[in-house]
Image 1 (tube, rainbow, N blue to C red):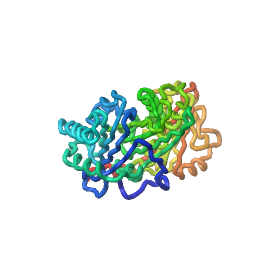
Image 2: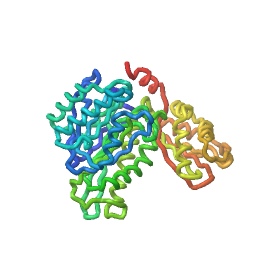
Image 3: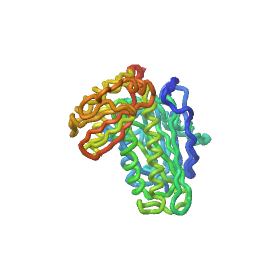
Image 4: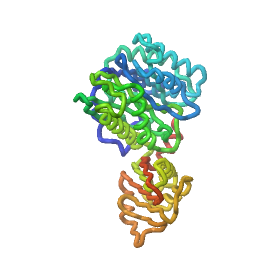
Length: 410
């Protein structure tokens, strides 16, 4: 992690509860020349259910392909995360590294290799050194349990602060189930699914197929609704593990008691984590929420919202606190979605700036300029043609983003 914390960072790391059936450890494998832990190992109770959503990149890492295959089994015993090296575009050596990590971990736990999930993040194009990975695992196996904050720091790369979130739910038999999650991500952030590594753990008993259905729903409106720079990584991974240690009756459908409460908790954790990624966007100084209403459909509204969120002109205008709403009009028009210029309405914060294809009569830019001086920005767009709605989150584009990425490898 870099030393200069994002100005949008929360004041402190969240209070995350321990999850029965999960033991997290960290170690320094030395993937880069840094004085910090960069390998995270989570041991999971036997019978832990797992679900995942992975990058749609056509050049995925071998870790992503490994996880796709492992998810077919529906159960997990371990997670290993490497930071500082994405192990992507590294040929057979990259694949060998994943195999070696899974084999060593499986031997340690006495489980099947495909019950071990592996994720890596960092520089693309360099094979993960197997000797460092195995030495790091040996250290992790023998060390004391780490805190959630230590684990969140260990999985980071250009992150400026550790990110965690928690929620709880009461299930049908009156038991309280708990959920804790950590995420890393700062740059190369765009939906499909959003560029990051995220790991969520719960003690609830949930059928693996239903856990996958819940995660798909949660990701669609959280991680897949954030963008920092419109770039999708080779390594995007979000995994959720359900140990069943709470002892509740296994939840297998939405009409099961407690299912909706657990779904709400998962939504909550995913949304908190997604927002934290945007708040740590490389060079970010403003957190931006964009809501599009009255579109032809929800999907259309989301595409329009992302067109606005990914526009360098919109993002730089907000960075400069320039109330240039014409750039929002531009982004709506280029989205390729149904829109009617003469029905379009735009607001910044609580101030309506345009309606029916025109600036509002007597428009005063003063309250908009004041809104843009804050670090929480709202943009609302009403297309006036349907009932579709979507909200996405992004950040501004500053010179800090250029500085970080121009010097990323050096």
